[in-house]
Image (cartoon, rainbow, N blue to C red; front, side, top):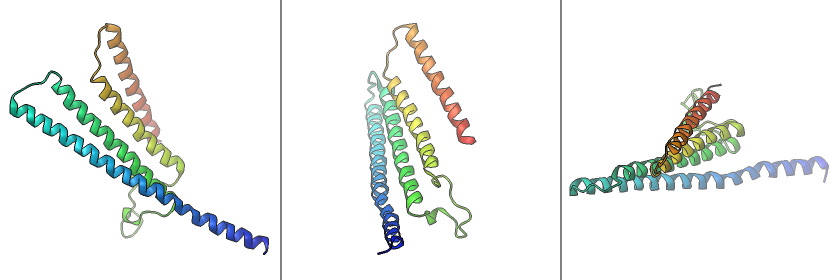
Length: 176
């Protein structure tokens, strides 16, 4: 067997092995579906709780915080589900093929929301959504905090300012 034959066999085998990423695509997609279902169930739970409180006329001590926290928790799950979708779409487009349904029939006008052409682009898209998940998670935790001194309130204000500045610069980087 010649060296060129071995190279061709090895190259063909290596190229076809890229289909192993379909496992990541499939299970990433399944994970996204699960997160969408769980987040929706959380919203329904908050709606049921709110309806019960309204119909009974009771007003629990932390009613508003519980409702807002439940909804923010669901938004957090939705955002993580979006990360999983972006990951699945991106890996599929990078290793397998473009998703034809994302394009018009002339294939010139393609949807660029989930279109990924490089690993760096995929990483950037995922990083932005992960930052949003962290921001939402931060606000969910802040709802249940108690502030006892003016210094704690100052720290809270500084943390909000830091988040706002970070999001501002994240938006600036995305526009370049």
